[in-house]
Image (cartoon, rainbow, N blue to C red; front, top):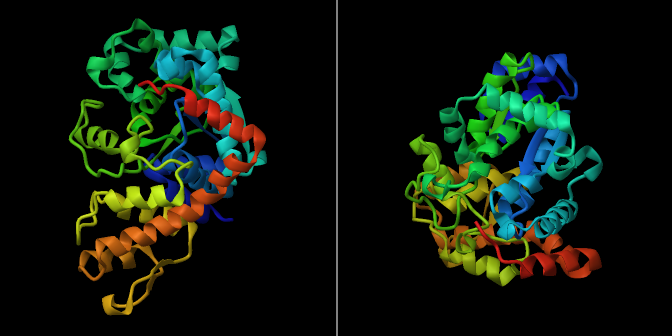
Length: 362
């Protein structure tokens, strides 16, 4: 695969790349650069985690990236997930790994690491303190938005450690590329500022899109000073908002019911969650998108690109209900093998039942 093909795969993943010029230089210099993402074990897996995350991983693996997936159990502890119970958090992390296996991710192409292993090394904490000594208190507080909490929820001193540790992770894992969601941008930008001060490198940031929740665009809730990013975070599909999420354990009828209730105004493409799933999931996993309709409503129609679907829908030539039914069909095709794995595999089923029994806390 030549350089331009690799760059194009990064463009498929990155809603924002900082910077593409640096990425190009990195790919010329390194055939297999290291990228990482971190995940707080925080409840049952949903569409962004189990389907969309894997789609992005597969594209970057094709581009030659060595990917490190960090189970951020200590971060979940600081963030009071699963009632701040580290044993429960550990079990949810094990469940996360099982989800990736069930999703079809080639586990031989990724490396799984745990924050709880990293924090036992004193040199890791040296990184944390060096980063903290080179960060103002105001800058650290501004970076706390990466925790997915509004300002009024940030009350504990321990939370100040969160962005310092996340920046430390980047250098401890030797990550050339920070490949996280757009909501993690502040920590990644801090790493770019701090790295050269410590005689380290400036990581490239490839921020992926945040899938919208079923309810559509939400009012900003105070997660970030940048209004556009605040709205995106407020509107994203979140496990802590089950009414706006599709989970991998939802059966076909539940998926259909949720999709039918979703925000999807006629002729409106922007900020339409159903169109969002078509663009970022369905057209990246399937060659075409078939909408089955009765003859009196125009008969079946097949779309071969997202732009074709976008044009057709914006013109009013496709009814929202037909779009929803087709989207539910494709999403169920992707979720079904994962759902069945957790129904049939003994270990997976035990983990699912255990995690399902836990109280999910923000």
